[in-house]
Amino acid sequence: FGSSLIEASWVMESARQHSCVRWSGGAAFVAGVGLIYAGVVAQNDAVMNDTRPMPFVLATGCATAVLGVTAICLGLTCLNRRAILAALVVTALVLWMVCLLTGGYALQAVVSDAGDMDAACEFAQRNSRGQPNANTPAEIQAAFDEVKSALLRCREAHPMAVSLQNCPGFTDKDAQPSSPHLPMLEWAESTFVCGGFCKPSIPVFGKPTSYVTETNKGEERPACFRDVASTLRWRGGLVSIVAFMATPALLSTAFAACWLCCAPPPRRRDKYGQDPALLSSDESDQDEDTNEMEMQVAGPSSVREFRW
Image (cartoon, rainbow, N blue to C red; front, side):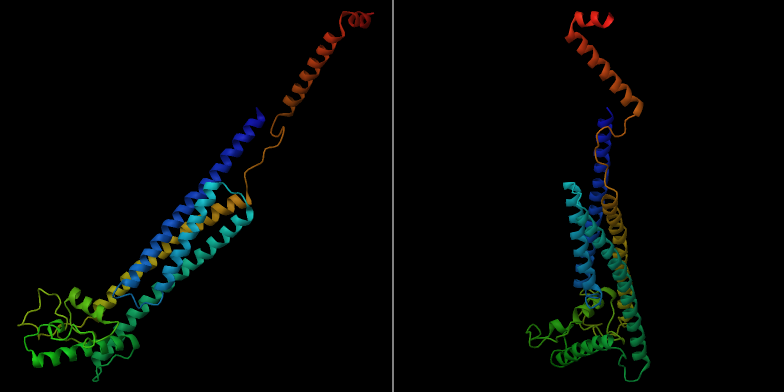
């Protein structure tokens, strides 16, 4: 009975530990998928595609998802090899630190880029030359100036053109202005009903389509940089939150694997956990049974000789 209790406790303890590894691995996998989704969305976003830490977010999400799948497999197979479990603990702790650094770096980067954008464009508005004093805002403003110049040249020959897309020959790739910032400028013009980047200007993409007409196509709109900077802040903040939310899952995976590695379930041992008094009584009962069997085998004559 005692050995059965020990075996049952061993099975229960092992199942509990492997269940913790499985569930924590599942949480890490979900966190990794969330990081991958955030990284892909950020890289395809018109505002955040140039943000520095986004590739790190995507790579960290892939590594976290792989770690989660590994922990789930170890929990399902009930593997108790300490070397593999120790490697899982170390990897989970390293990824936990990487997620903390990635979240902090992403938050600092977007706040810094948005601040530089505001400061550079405000300087451009105060400066008579009208050029931002930072690299990225200057590139965005230069891209907008190129598109605006192309639209003004087009309207000299075609005064009815509402946007650059209405100009003949704009569909030709050789005639289109090329800049990686044009999708962001078009998105900002359509979303915030603004014009220009650092300085107020006319709409060049004709966005929103239902708003721009032949009568108001020459009206200036407020600059777009403030709305773009605000969007960059809160979207980058969401990416940072996703990175920070992955840290508890990685930490729980490390603790669960460490529990299984450093405190494995007890092994079954003969007569372990039984009361010594019960063991002695069982041994005495076995001795009495043995003596009775020997007397029955010897027969009545041996009993009479013993009595005599």
